[in-house]
Length: 218
Image 1: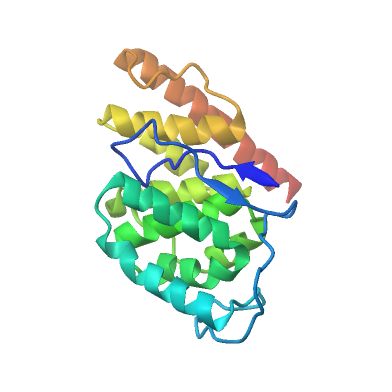
Image 2: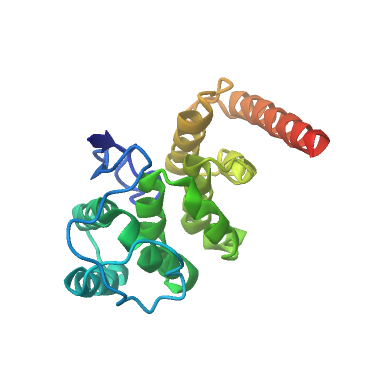
């Protein structure tokens, strides 16, 4: 079946209206391989994921090498869509890019991983250091990826982004939070500063209450 993935949130900060990524997936969020598989990947993140054919492994490496050098929104969108369409066999490349790639490449990889909707990725992502505040949009894209895959522990990163001086960043953070939690707490990215601050406090109260519930349950 065809599954429509939500628009890329932070990968293309100048294109809020970017079309949604679409990928072919099974009900478990995976795309079945269409060719024979062989052990050709030497990624440290290979794990137990399905392995690509030799030809597809070569194509994955070639596309991975392009990630840091893409410039236009359409180029980035097309690559995210292609990587998403490959399903599970692309995970090792994407995870390695998140761990070792530059910011531009890592944001593309995170967007493709988020589009998989596969929560099995979370334990592996947890082993990769979370970007610090100095990484800007990369940190926000990483938080969004976790949220989309079902891990809301990094919601405070997106809530913090609601206080950005850039209206676009505020809007993208709200979009990621709203699409995962289905809440908004009255925050309007272009609203009055005092109203935005009050809404951020409501988001922070929600996050604190959620963290306390998790602590008590644990």
